[in-house]
Length: 310
Image 1 (cartoon, rainbow, N blue to C red):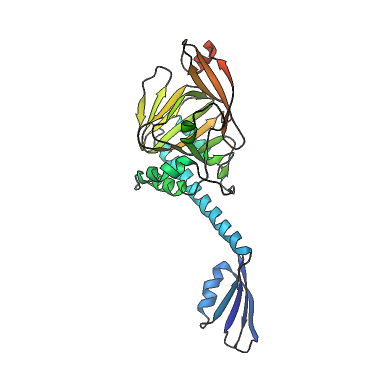
Image 2 (cartoon, rainbow, N blue to C red):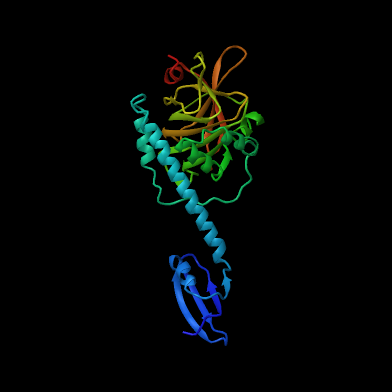
C-alpha cells in the first residue's frame, strides 16, 4: 500500500469512517473503525495530516459522555449509601426498608437534564459544604463528585414562605420523579440547607432518613421534644406522619435524604396562632418536585395522635 499522507476522519458515536490518500491524491485507505480500534490504527501509520469532520456528532458525543459520567456518579452514590446503611441495620433495623428500596432503583437508564441557573444557596454555600466533607470516606468522596454534577432545585415555590427560607432549602434528586434515575417508590438525593435556616414543625406520610455529610443538623421531634444534633456520619430516622423541625447553625449543612412509603403525600406545616391554637398548612408536590402551598385546617385530636403527639 502506498504511504498515506492525508486522512479524513469522520467522527461519530461508535463507528468512525476513515478515508486516506497518498501524495498524489490517490485513495489508499477506505474503512470503518470502531472506537476501540482508532488508536491502534493510527499507531501503525507514519506521521500524516489528519482532518476531522464532526459536525453535529461531536456535541452528541459530549452529551452522551456527560450522561454516562452522571450515571456512574449516581450509581456509585447509591451503592455507597446502601453500604453505609447496611452497616447500621443492627443499630436501626428499620433501615432494611430503605436498603430494599435503594437496591430496587432501576439504574439502567438516565434522565437527561436541560441547562438551568443554579439556586442561590448552591452558588453561595455548596463549595463550603463540600470542603467540609471528610474526603477519606468512600461515601463522602462519591457525594463530593456528585454534588458538582447533579441538578439542584429550590424545593419550595410560591407564596406562604419567607424568601430566606425558600432560597435556603435546595435539593438534588438522584432517584425520583425528577431524579437522575426514575423511581416511583423512593425519593433520594442530596439536601443543602443554608446557614441559620429553621425549617418549622411539619409532617408527611413518607418514612424519612437524614444522613449528615457536612455541617450539623439540629432535629426536634414533636412539639415539645428536646432538640438533638446530628453530626457528619450520623443519621436520624423520622417515622411517617411524625411532626418534626430542622435547624442549621452558622455553617451550611449538606445531607443525604431518602423518602419511602407515601412519597407523594402532602407536606403539612404546623403553626400556632396568638391564642395558642394549632393549625396545619398543606403543601403539595408538583410534577417538577417543588412544593406549593394550598389549604390549611385545624389540628384535631386524630391528627395529634397520627403525629405521635398522643
